Length: 124
Ligand code: 5GP
Image 1 (cartoon, rainbow, N blue to C red):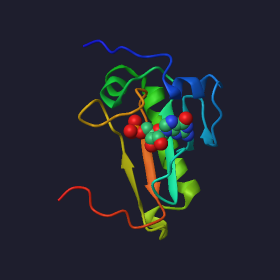
Image 2 (image 1 turned 180 degrees about the horizontal axis):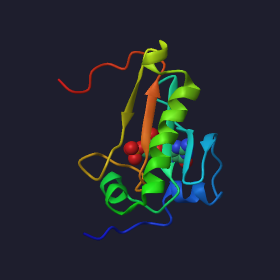
Image 3 (image 1 turned 60 degrees about the horizontal axis):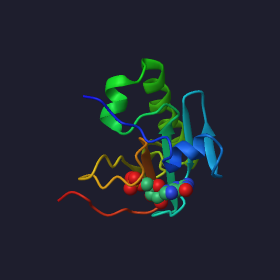
């Protein structure tokens, strides 16, 4: 399986500093920033800095350091937003749309963190 990464996608341009973003957290391997069209009071996107198209690409080809950093960055952002259910932050939702059936708009792996309100059921 080979993955074709488009260096002109919007998130690649954000990572190169060509498009501004509202950064929430930046680490060695990851960047978290506010979604431009928020679907909830909290809507943050977390992306790896590496050139990964989607989750399976990342899971198969990223280094362990990148995977750990990405996972911990998602957790750190949840903590920063104060949405942790273990802290009575009422919880949150993680979404990663992958490919055509996932209706992925931007072809650079990203996880949406949504919170700040009751989000409604997605799966019945
Ligand atoms: P997808 O459908 O690929 O999972 O979601 C892509 C997300 O990227 C959407 O929620 C959209 O609002 C967000 N987005 C698209 N362009 C930009 C941009 O230029 N800046 C930011 N911050 N978010 C963007």
